[in-house]
Amino acid sequence: MVALYLASTSPARAQIIADIGLSAQVLNPRWTKKLLLQR
Amino acid sequence: MDEEAVVAEMTSPTAASIAQHLAERKAESALTPDVDGLVMGGDSVFEFDGEFLGKPHTADVATKRWKAMRGRSGILHSGLCVIDHTGGTHRGSLSEVSSAEVFFRADVTDHEIAAYVATGEPLSVAGAFTLDARGAAFIEKIVGDSWAVVGMSATSLRSLITGLGHDYTELWAPQ
Image (cartoon, rainbow over all chains, first blue to last red):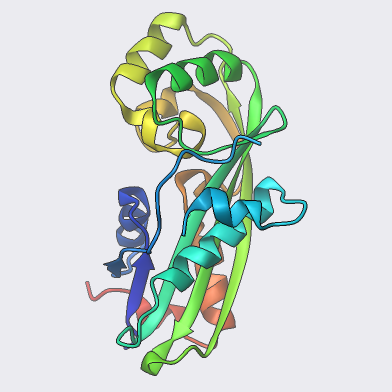
């Protein structure tokens, strides 16, 4: 079976993965959180 | 790597292209040689009034956004990227964006906005609203892929995994 990984710090996305019947290991993206995109 | 820097590198970014690009970069940034499998990355950007909005982070910003959004609509774009890294090798990747237009009720009161913001729920989500929690009561309707609003399209995920040559149903967790 192929393993699934979720590159996200979002609990919501992890919950979606569980809700749709999948199981994924969460990886922390090397990512700096910043206030986004007001352009 | 930070999101502002990544977006600044893009030429003529749109809300959809930003969501897709950030999803790709997030998935790529998590790759290490010991990762053996399919790596998913996601990102959401809310497009409202010509602006591309992420998380409000503060109560003041969330309150202002809600007062501007009530009675109007915006488009939530969710990018999703899947990288096939089976065997610890980059074998390919696919990504796509799903979108939905979100219509907010016009009768949301200042009191309700203040109470909603005080819960903290809208501060950490793109667009300052949720469809799957308290914010659901303030949303009139959704047109498009409702999964995009929650933050990750299940339909897109199946499409990308299948496109990379894997059987989606084999990934279901044992019951």
